[in-house]
Amino acid sequence: MKQKLKTHKATAKRARITGGGKFMHLKSARTKYRRKKDPNRNRSLNQLNVMVIGDARKMKRLLPYAK
Image (cartoon, rainbow, N blue to C red; front, top):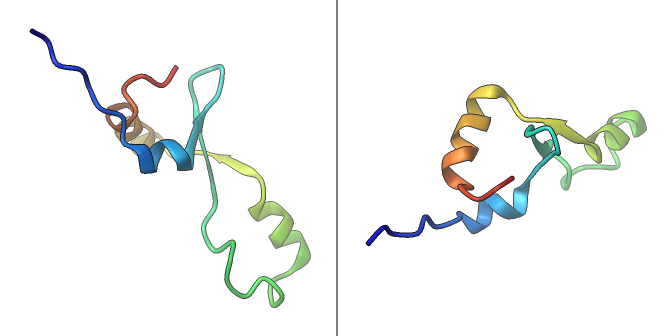
């Protein structure tokens, strides 16, 4: 009998997949020392970014049922 693949739950909470199949994630450095950082930088940290191709390949293994 074929076994089911398990989804890595921590990764599922941190990454999203677009309709076109790209993986999106938030940048790091969002929580500490936000007052010191430039407001433009803080606003850009709130936006989702496209994941690098090498990391996106790993996501396909960690999130086997992501569509």
